[in-house]
Length: 106
Image (cartoon, rainbow, N blue to C red; front, side):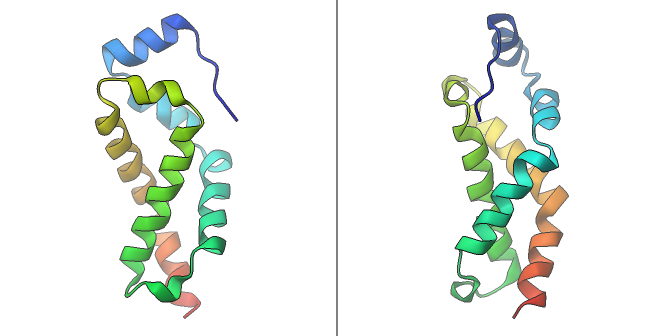
């Protein structure tokens, strides 16, 4: 799925750095959980020493997958800041759930 945004929305995102609220509205459970679940199914957890390392990779891949839907975001000057924000946001929201999955299914 791709997001179509107007020029004024793009300008708002790129000039005012209001991306945090914009991203939070779009990074809902319907968008991120299927990605997380797909990576949980696709990544062999036996290659990880602990649940934190496992969760970090699942979150990182899920965030990159989410961002890939909107390639125009890669052109924003503060893309790295946005990516870091997304990673932290998803880690706070879903990190414990992913770690519990790792620990419960050993």
